[in-house]
Length: 199
Image 1 (cartoon, helix red, strand yellow):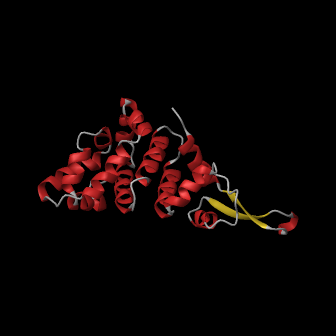
Image 2 (cartoon, helix red, strand yellow; image 1 turned 60 degrees about the vertical axis):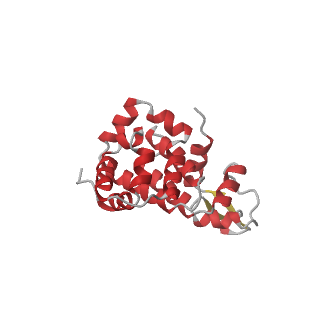
């Protein structure tokens, strides 16, 4: 594994107190080596408390399924041994920092738990994290409400969710003719499977 640092270290250095107060004793921190390094760096550099980042990290870490998953020592060890641990840690913190509300970190926590439980590949996890990041929260709530199926094609939510990769257009007739309709993509199916999963 390459030396820890990069963008994650910069983010944590800028928001040291918020990060330290919320995650320093978290199983997630212990499971991602780069976070330990970055928190230590942040302590040395110091920073102004960022309450919004603190709240978003707290929402992510307190997602119930993620907490249950990280209670397993085997799961924590799996992430420690993951050759992509640094990349995953950086992506998590950078995406969480970008979120403009406090519900998206909860959704991210659920898909991260799914990744740890081998329900998602690393690539699928990154793609879903991106989809959650770029989608409007109200559209994601619609997606959950309709159980991942675009039941109202004329709604603005559907084409916007298509831009996030969760729906796609198709022709319902033979030889490419007929009306254009939306259907759920494999990525959208993966997201809904993660969100409906109950332990």
